[in-house]
Length: 228
Image (cartoon, rainbow, N blue to C red; front, side, top):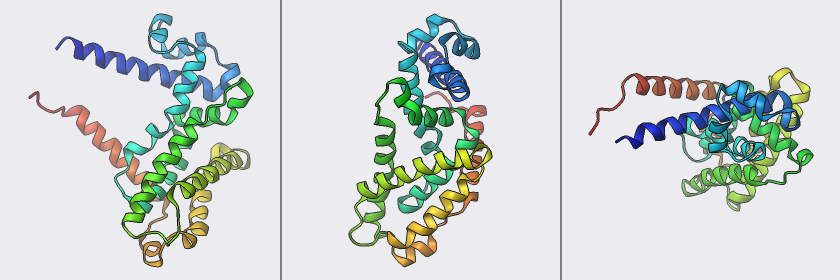
């Protein structure tokens, strides 16, 4: 039993370090960030950080690869609707979630600090391809649509959109609208008409999903399950 509180503290400490690193990476990029600034932001010792991460590079990779954690746990939809929801929540969270924003920045800028890590893109492609395989099983897609190919295309499109939006608007304020337009243009070429009619490409879905997930998490925190 004594191990469990220690494990929980270690998990919480790792989360605090990741969040602090994200704040610094988001503000200053990889080159402008320092371990000392991250420690100050986290209000932790170097020993605590190095217990979890070997170096600034290791920490940057962890932030890059944590992107889906800001989105996927909030969703309960399936198939094509789930894929649409992922992109809507992603567009919303990029404006509000520093961990996601830092991960996107590091992934986009990684060539400038000597990284060539395709894993974050591949992770998104796998998640989206899984949604599309369910969509195929449910008969939602047009004949000939290959899930992996379409998933990679959506990842590529989103990568370009967020880069464009970061320059075109303050804090990517128009990104949700851009994602909505992407689906309006893309949907007729991938989905059967009846599915297009019932698939919601509505920015309000992102806000609703996040609100419901936050409310559920708060309820769970205040009413933990009884021990077995």
